[in-house]
Length: 252
Length: 108
Image (cartoon, rainbow over all chains, first blue to last red; front, side):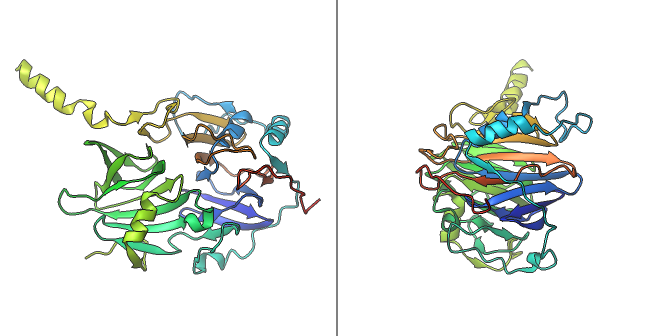
């Protein structure tokens, strides 16, 4: 989301910045390190429940002010607690020699092709990868992980919206739970005649089976959509759309 | 005047949010529509990371190898550069097919 970090997968590190994406299937060693100030990333873990691991190795935090980070409250890494929890959550901790990121000068320039299987780790640079344009929704869908890369278990896509003319919006219903995270602009979600508007940093949960319309309240908006299956709005938009060369909508 | 005020109040009432639960310190216990405003929601502190829990709506999900259903969790971490991190280098043993697996780490 912001800042700079290094992500290692199977011993190979890469510099990852805002908009970049890393996919780590199960059974692949991985770790990360913040290397820039004000670094923030969003991590989706599937199957559900792994958040309990983090809850078990940490302390509840209820600050008086919800600032992003408590620079005045340093904590030691809870090695003992972490060690106990790893066994309970099927994590194999490996001590390794950390290598400096390699290929940093080239990986952002890759063509961003998604692998055709669910076992290959991969990185996508900001704006890279396939894109699909759906004119009715005024949306460009940039899939970061499709059912092919996740064995149908979940999907992640960046969706860029232009403001549509008029009040008519496409309606979508998904058999999967879905989660939206605001990145740019202001997005309106309408459900059963009631609407909620979300901006950067806000997140919206849409349960399975709920019909919604999604539109941009300003000229341009962007958000992440995550679906807990292969029938999310992103997948529907891709099927109904056409291949597009850019991660942003056309101007005409 | 009163009626006009009431009408205005009704028009501005949070009806627009009635279908969406606005999350405070904890996430809803069931899969209802909800919104978590920026930096709201449950949070934990882990060394130099702050994790915000944004969703875990598959209540049958445990993250264990004997996982019986799929879902997704989202964590959002904030931090600063720290030479001590990473202290962990993990290999997930989560089963992709709900079957508990015994793995032999090739690096050992």
